[in-house]
Image (cartoon, rainbow, N blue to C red):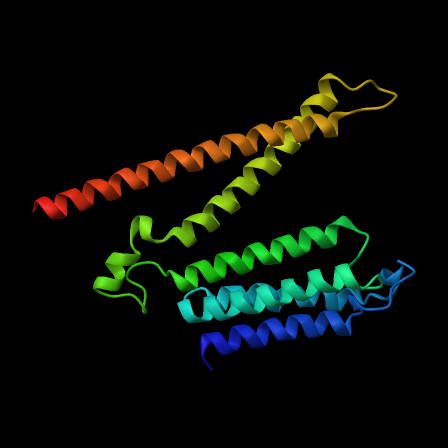
Length: 219
């Protein structure tokens, strides 16, 4: 069995385990659907999910198809969470964790698709002129995925650090505390800083590309 097929089968197995464990429901209007969970199957579903990505990663075609499958799954989750009041995919429609899950699966899908469409030079699908075209600045999809992942990590770390700082320094022992708001302010500044960093990196790539083009024409 090819990596592509095995990866997709593992992904289907993971979703099937979630269904079997009661983690996927379409009529949980009470909001207490978690009482029907079979926790062992939920934990077990995590194994083929991670294995699917690990199996797909060495092969660009497998990465692409697994990313597309995850993107379709993310789209279905978003549609159901918007249109169906009783939808539950581990978390219910009214729980913010479901939105975070949808964002995470969408991000993983984008990373897989980007690295499948623009594989690294020297991989089994890139050789010669194709490898040269994919190198460096040409892999803009991969860079975009890296920027997104890096920005998310930095912003979340800044929010946590800001909230912790204001909790320790500004919050009284009793009464209201706006440490969370302070954390989001730190996160906003971190987002701005990441945007500036991305702009600087892209300018550096652009200047290098112009210099290489000039050298080739001059040679």
